[in-house]
Image 1 (cartoon, rainbow, N blue to C red):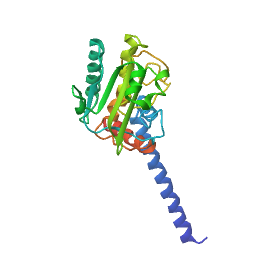
Image 2 (cartoon, helix red, strand yellow):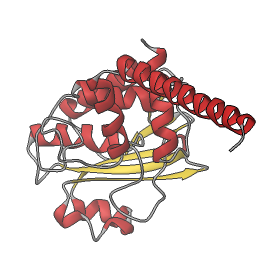
Image 3 (spheres, rainbow, N blue to C red):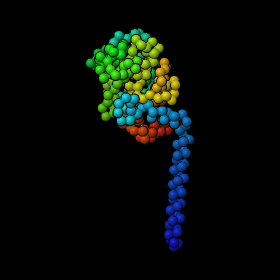
Image 4 (cartoon, one colour):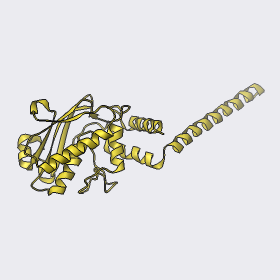
Length: 239
């Protein structure tokens, strides 16, 4: 190898080393800024917010991009009515992308239907749910256009579930209707816990999942790689 080639090769290795150092430094900066809790939020978000428990929908982010207008298509106790208002207020306080949730008295003005009653009656209104009601005291279904959720319905079985369980089911099914549609066994007190619980409040992780899905920078249609990048971007901007 002549002297010229040796010089070129030496400089090439220097450039590779410099690039590696810069890359490592950038990764280290990200690691330093994103703490363990941040990384757990990202991981849990990807578990919960991509796809659904049932069906074959693609595993991408989905959320309501327009007003969510609730119609209650059954008699509702004062206690459950208060609980629904409480849940709606909590969600609206966590969202910053102008999500609006209203409870309306005219079904023709609604795009989300809640039924409190028996599973059999719910299935008579929505026959597609017939195969699920025996083993589920609460259910939800949503539809979307271009990954923007635009209609849905849910039920809470007020005959098989006691008062505490009814409140839990209302919170769980409605929250999952927002686009946080999967369950996980990772956190026993999370509203998204896959095992049967009677949780009546969001954990800090739950709140962050709602907050981040309904953050102005969060987009619909993001897959697991794209949403990881977007979550890091949002969390780093908050430091």
